[in-house]
Amino acid sequence: AENRSNRMQIDLGRSRRRISIRRVGKKAVKKADVLCVSDQFDFGCVTDRVREAVNEIAKSILTVVDSRSRIKEYKNAFLKPNEIECARALNLSDDFLAKADEKETERTLKELFNKTNSNICLTLGKKGVRVLKDNKIYSCFGLKVEDPIDTCGAGDCFLSAFSLALAVNAEIIYCETIGNLASAISIKKINTTGSASRSEILTLFNKEAKDE
Image 1: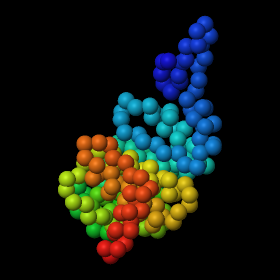
Image 2: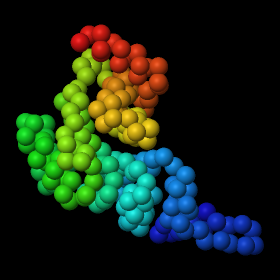
Image 3: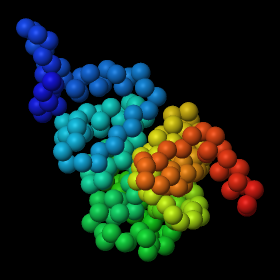
């Protein structure tokens, strides 16, 4: 198989067919409850044309996007930047949101919304999560996690859990809480790309509720 500018050429012996990834992707996603996009590398499969297709799909299908350096290029979706990705998208210093108060954080969320016409789920590490949806802010504060920790895969774990909750129409406060719990579980799994099972999430939820 050969990948050239979002078109895949597949060798079928004597016959050769060219398949548009955009066309196949649009057809497949019609059956999905949610489309998750992890756009992390300059040389990845999410190219400019794929990104254009995602923006179009997001008008009709729930789409959640995590992107290291191109979050502001997505439209009509639910964007999930961390504090550094959000700051860089708006030409702010990397530590701006780490130091920002709640009013500054809210203004930053609204600025990114205005640039992208997208709901925003901002992860802030120890400070928790802030979601801007329908011009309303939802706050979920951070969980205390003792060292040692390994943050590899924490963002992907949050993306999966948050998107799953959105797909079943859970209230936003529950979506961000489930994502927060999942990532807190994943970072305790050292030297591996962490994950979080349903039972692990429920156990941690019950523990946190009891401690309160």
